[in-house]
Image (cartoon, rainbow, N blue to C red; front, top):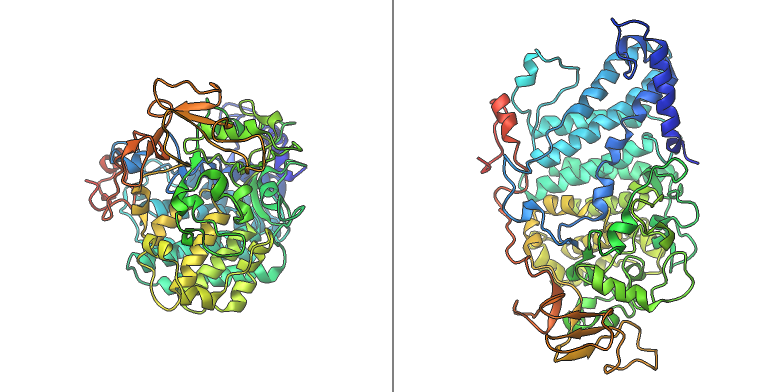
Length: 600
């Protein structure tokens, strides 16, 4: 069992330590650590920081059901409805985690074990860097605080520091964390390797954000991304987990069907869950149950997957009008390990069940029901999942490395061989050919990302494809669109599975059509129009009532893609929405902050 799965025992021990040091009413409450009386030993330093690890992966659970332009929920987020404002759903301005880190860094001098103190101060600085990375990508420049502030401290009312200053301080903290952080591989604790992965992620974000938003010093941060990624690659501490073969390795990395623990081979940091300790999450319920989220993936994302021979699906004539059976034939094996596809066999089961696909069409908003993170049916009740959720993994670092080098213009085929190839080898996909990609850039991707240009245009587009496919539902897509300056992609109409014209009642195949008993007349799922009776009531949907179809011209009717009828008008302001508004109450408290452009 991994270390963080003892977190409740650890916190209980911490309370005992505090109680032992609190014996009268003049001292800190027994339920809190007293800074003056603790931080004296390595154990106390460790216990305190254990309570802050959640901040390193706070986005993870919400990121599983990411929206952006990948996923679809019945209700749109306010950042796409035009309802986000300084007084509603503004950016998160909570600074409590930063205060906890700075308290630690103030009182860690109580520990006379210099090696232990330096190690855990490095961990604290990694956590602080992550805190400020989140603030930077949300708001841009924010006030920098590296000490404990009290209620009467005038610095509470200071102006925002510049983006350059915050980014520089983040790098300083990360470099300290890399230099002095724990060198052991630990699945649920922050280490030197976590700091390197975070630096790789942060520097790619900052470098590309600056490049595509016209800011200075983009190449510097891209170079720092390459350095951090190279150091992690050269360490040989991690590699791509190839599991039990190309047909299940990617799925099992997230479902963890055998142990419930994330892979120590590939995963650098995970948020841990345990049935034994009663710490569980609810991904199965939210994805599989009609009363859950009804989350589905978008057809434009599904179209991103290549064919299994490496050719482009979107080069096939009529690709937009293929049924789910037709579009899943001979695709990148990650597709069948990310959504339910015909002949889908659920984790923990040994054979195909038609009901699994029928449920996908009815429950998922788009008909494309994810299986990523989904465990066996024994975990389907509310809050019964015990698989770890991944915050950082080696595949992302490899993708960061390739993308940063491509953006810098220093990418070679050998760089792809030690990055993208390793990721694709897991599922038996051919390697990315740099020369071929640059000679023939994908027109569909080029239309999505018109700012990409230059000699490496084709390979940058293909790396973006690879990143989107490999990292879907890992909470990174929204940030990617922000740094690409491609937020407008989220305003496209969400579409699901394609349904041919429904005239009366039609049978819709959910098998690979090798079943000799299937025919359009009998079918194994039915779509029907008002006044008609389908042969199977439980496995059918009425067009215009329980399902809405939209044709290629954007008209609702009895043919086209499954859509949510209310998702008509999405709003994205290119001049404003790449930074969130500061909450209005914070501006009233501190007028020196100043609001982000056009949010007044």
